[in-house]
Every structure is written in structure tokens, then in C-alpha cells.
Length: 186
Ligand SMILES: [Zn+2]
Ligand SMILES: [Zn+2]
Image 1: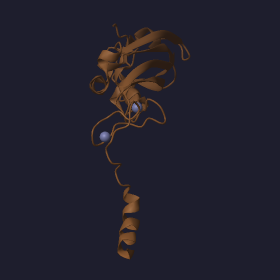
Image 2: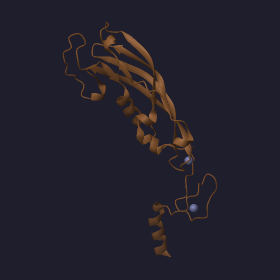
Image 3: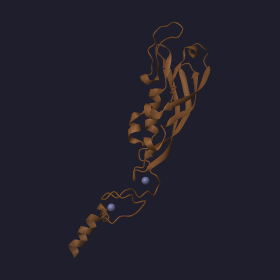
Image 4: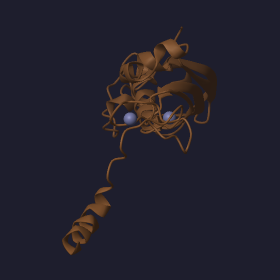
């Protein structure tokens, strides 16, 4: 899959404030966030491709990038480990700042500390790191296949959505104190 997260903005930087470009962006989520390829279920689906339209606009401070990207991710249910498809939506809105003056060629010290938001000395704007951070935030921590998923038995591993098992239910720790009191009275 082709990724196009890198833009040469030299021409845009020479235009009047308010000038825009728009582009369709695609990103391979597993390449962007390799941790997800490990926790995901790669064989259950094709590699997820994050895609959508973005708009680049020249402002007084730099280049404002806005866009909505989305895909579907297949993740293991946090209770029963069966694959669950979750929509992943990333709303991009960041200002990238130049590190070199496009007209004079002089270096500029950006006010922005986050290097992910710097346009480099070759006027390259790279969405990769920003998208990586946004994807990490957008991925659900505990996806469930359904709200009432019963999960796996902690003793025998049986998927309790399919069949119940004969293991004794775990005593609820909240009742332990009460049970101790009752035993004293007997
Ligand atoms: Zn489940
Ligand atoms: Zn069991």
C-alpha cells in the first residue's frame, strides 16, 4: 500500500495567506503504529488503511492541516479475545511551522517545541508522527465484541458466550467479610 503523508510545501509557502491545497491521504496503520500489528489480529483482516481528505492552508503562523481520516480496525475483544471490528476515526487539526524562511533561506527558530510539527529545511511537511500519536489516542483500550460479553472462564478458559462450564464461580471478594461474620455466628 502506498502511503502519502509527505508534502513538499515550498510552493504553498510562497503564496498569499489563505492559499490552500487539498489531498487524499492514505496511511498503513500497522506501519504507522507497529504495536497495533502485534496486538491486532492480522490474519483476520487486511492491513487497515487510514484514509481521508486533508486540507492544507497557509496561515500567518505556518500551515494549518485539517482533515478527517478513518478506517476499521480488527482487535481482540478484551474479554473473550474473539475478533471485533472497531471504527477508527482521526480528526486532524494541527499547525505546522516552517524552520526556514522560504524567501530569504534564513533559518527560523520555531516557537513550536514539538518537532513533529516542524516543516523541515527542504520544505517537507510530514504528517506521519502526528498521525501516529492521534491513532494511539483514538484506539479503544478495552474493545468488547458486545456489551454483555461474558468473556472467558478464568479457570478453564471456556468462552462463556458459547457454553457455560462446570467450574465453581469465583467467590466475590465483597462478600468475603460478610461470609466470615456469618461463619462466626454459626
Ligand atoms: Zn467478547
Ligand atoms: Zn471454567
